[in-house]
Image 1 (cartoon, one colour):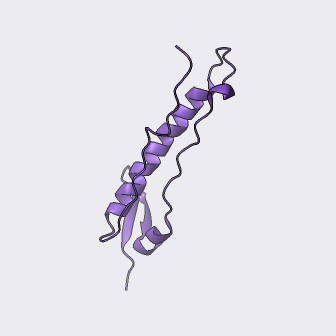
Image 2 (image 1 turned 135 degrees about the horizontal axis):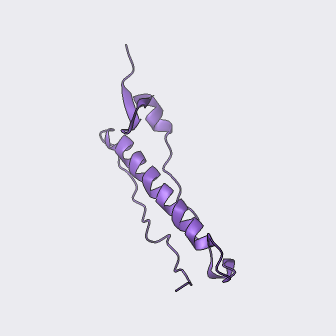
Length: 93
């Protein structure tokens, strides 16, 4: 019997996993937001908040890919994560 392959990323057709390996596919973990006091307020480029925003965007992409992989598994409930809750208020104006 052949294993059914599932695309990991639709934009990369050769990147596929077996359906069995989806069971070992953990939910992506959101990046930890920096605290206001972590910023030095000296206008760094990139600022720690810019770096966090980049990490948050990568997390959103990974989460969407994870959800699409797991949407193909019938009967599996998927936990919901809020990406907005992890977004800190940037002190810069």
